[in-house]
Length: 79
Image (cartoon, rainbow, N blue to C red; front, side):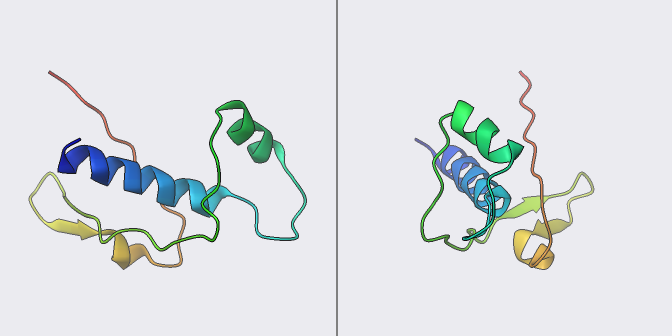
């Protein structure tokens, strides 16, 4: 597995951890969706990796710049 794949997996785990319910919170439709996808929570939650991506103009975008906010990252692949 290359660095690119590892970064992708770390980002998906971080997003999943943000979307999981807090301890003591009632289950929701999102919980059912995660169960259907066989996604397991990271317990205890861990901070996301220091992910840095480049915008189309080349400026760096750091995940740390969005601390405390919900971030959805989508990766599109083309050949």
